[in-house]
Image (cartoon, rainbow, N blue to C red; front, side):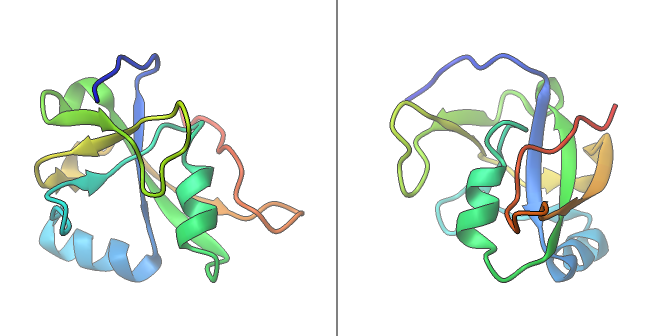
Length: 119
């Protein structure tokens, strides 16, 4: 499934350890599905809360969508969210292309919510 989504930002979530390893390598390699998981700022809280329940804070790497094209495909997530597609990068993610890296912390209600735009 492919779709056009407004907005220039795509984000990649990482723990401190994942970020350290990616920084050493310079890239995030595709996972078992052959892609790197990405999210928009409006979506990023979904995987953060589902997949990183034990983490108090994460690291967000911010990329411009145009810098990652044409390898981004918009597809259903796992588990699917009705009517929502997520960006998947079918290539290694070059951390040098990140515009910013920011901390992503839980809010006062102990959940991750939509992060503020960095720039």
